[in-house]
Length: 300
Ligand SMILES: C[S@@+](CC[C@H](N)C(=O)[O-])C[C@H]1O[C@@H](n2cnc3c(N)ncnc32)[C@H](O)[C@@H]1O
Image (cartoon, rainbow, N blue to C red; front, side):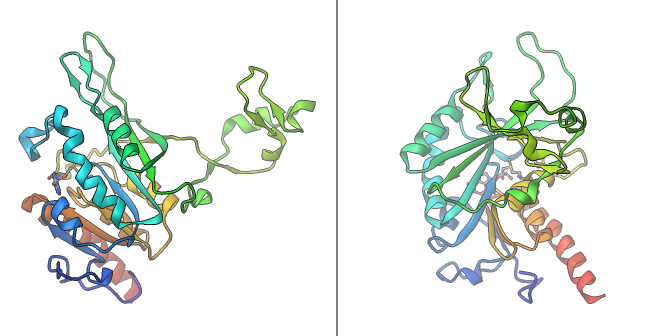
């Protein structure tokens, strides 16, 4: 993307009859993703990161789908996502079930099962822990401080750059690795019988370790002019992990443009789809702002 393909005026217009991906790259398309996706070529996208409407949670701001109809609504879209995703690509679905009549609705669980039936592999579930979640009091539950980021793949072998998201080894290493027992120096099976084995000594002297599947990030605090924008750090984490520079990242429920902004900053190509004209315009403005910064930097 950053190697000469930038056209600041090309965001809106795309020849939807075309099957050439180049025409789609670095575009934000105004439309219903089910219709738009049908025009995108097969096996052309490296990574999908998206946060669809969580059933009718935000009906007042951008509409919603009844929880009871959620799976039926999402499946045709998922079918298109599967078609456009490359075989070694990944689909990250940020979602959380709402509370209906005092209990968690099961539409996310039903969706996972339906996506498996559709042929997706449910490879992993990352938990986005919202570090800055505001305190509150509810009669039958505590505050909701996490959301699911479900990982789906088309095949078992997919692109994964684990080193790109390593984290500092942390304080535990200073005490734990200073006093190694005999069992720490061999691959030692867990004494609780969990079947897990580890060789702790492998981590001596290392400053960085692989993260867990719990991602600790703050929610978006600034006014993004969108009621459900996720923080840029969320797509950044997945884009680093599941794509390379110049790859194509798709968000079919783009909202304020966060995924495309993140892709742009990380030197990936992007395609965004948004059905609401106001949010589409907002996304264009947000993406142009980072692209302008990049162009200015490259002119220095
Ligand atoms: C949860 S928000 C996404 C927020 C986004 N991640 C951000 O950071 O701004 C979901 C978005 O999907 C859009 N949307 C809903 N149905 C759609 C459809 N069928 N096609 C495209 N966009 C849709 C909504 O207008 C809304 O902006």
